Amino acid sequence: MSTPSASVPEPGRRRGGLLGRMTHRLTRSQGDLEAEELRETTSTMGGTPMCDVADRDVVKVCGAVRSVSLRPRADHVPALVVEIDDGSRMLRLVWLGRRKIAGIEPGSYVLAKGRVTFKEGVPTIFNPAYELKPR
Image 1 (tube, rainbow, N blue to C red):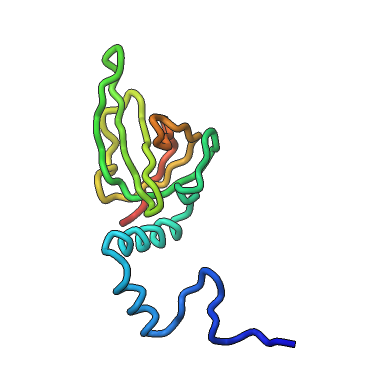
Image 2 (image 1 turned 120 degrees about the vertical axis):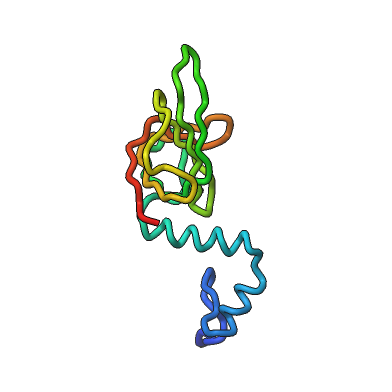
């Protein structure tokens, strides 16, 4: 009869302690560390991780605003396009007929709910319900 070894960490679990944390931080790139921190921040705000969304799902996602742009559509109807990131994937939010939404700017956090569609390979939610989150 064998007993489980205490020195073998569980799958998916980092070694604890100061040395383990330092090793983890030193062996990761700055981008990986920022993405991990963003994932932790947005997961506490609620929502589905963007890497887990599927086409036609109704989801609630939370992420940091990376870019805001205004794109003209047919018949001179504007569309406000916002890209958000939760550290796992980018997702596009599109508000048709809007030129600006107060408070939505790069660096702010948005919790959005709506049906996902993949437009040009990018998960997109049109006219989502949204809530601004404190930074």
